[in-house]
Length: 119
Image 1: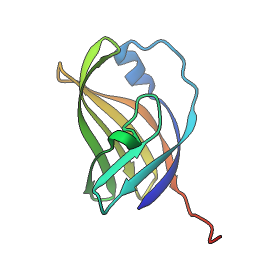
Image 2: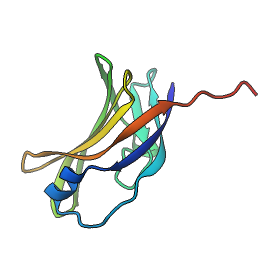
Image 3: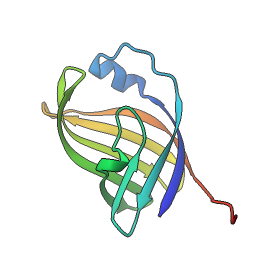
Image 4: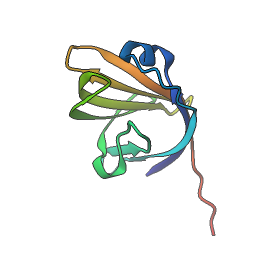
C-alpha cells in the first residue's frame, strides 16, 4: 500500500480546452495505491474516488490508475478517467478522455509518500 499526500491545481491548457472559467485554488488531497488489489484512488471534485477506485498498471516509474467512465461534464461526454504518479519525481497528472477522441490533462501537481509514525 502506498499512501500519498498531493498538492494539486487545475491545468490551464485543460481548463481552456474544456471552456472552464471558474478559478479553482490549489488544494492538498490524499491518494492511495494498493499494489495487492491493483487499484488506486484520490480525493477531489473530479476524481477517481475511494468508493470507485481505478485499475492500476505500472510502466517504468509511473503508476497509472484508470477506469472507464460514461458521464457528461463541461459540455462533453467523458468516457475515461486516469491519473498518473511518477515514483521518481512525485509528478501527478489527471486526464480525462472524451467521446470525441480528445485526451485532456485537467489536473497536475506533486505527491509525496506519507510515512506513518510508529505510535
